[in-house]
Length: 126
Image (cartoon, rainbow, N blue to C red; front, side, top):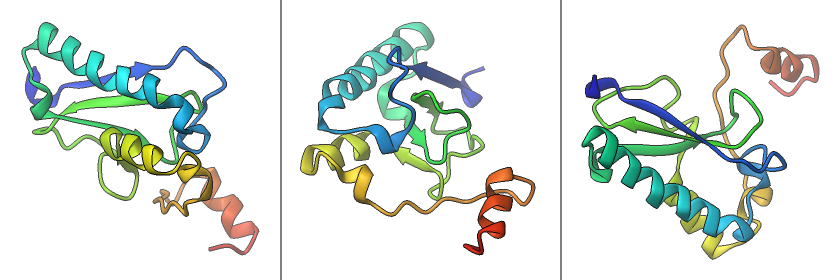
C-alpha cells in the first residue's frame, strides 16, 4: 500500500560506505539516484517526487551506501531529523564544499541496546 511506501536504492560502488565517504566527486551519482529514483517511483507506484522523503542515514544500519525513498505520509523508523539527512541537502552541501561530510560534526541518536553506544560509554564519551 502506498501510505507506507518504503524503498531503498543501493549504490553499486562498495567503496562508498556512508555519508562520511561522499565528496563532490559523487554529485553525478547522487543526482542520478535522486532523479532516476523519483522517476522510477512515479512510474511504478504513481507517487510523485513531491510526495517522497528521500534520505540517507547517519549512522547507517549497514555500511554500504544506500538511499531511502519513503512516502511523506509514512513515519518510517529512522526518518527523523537526528538520523536522516535529506538527499537534496546532501547534494547542496557537497556542491558548496566537497569535503563537507568529512569535516562536519554529525549528531545521531542511538538506542540503549546498541553496541556503538556501549563503545562510546566504555570510552567515556557519553
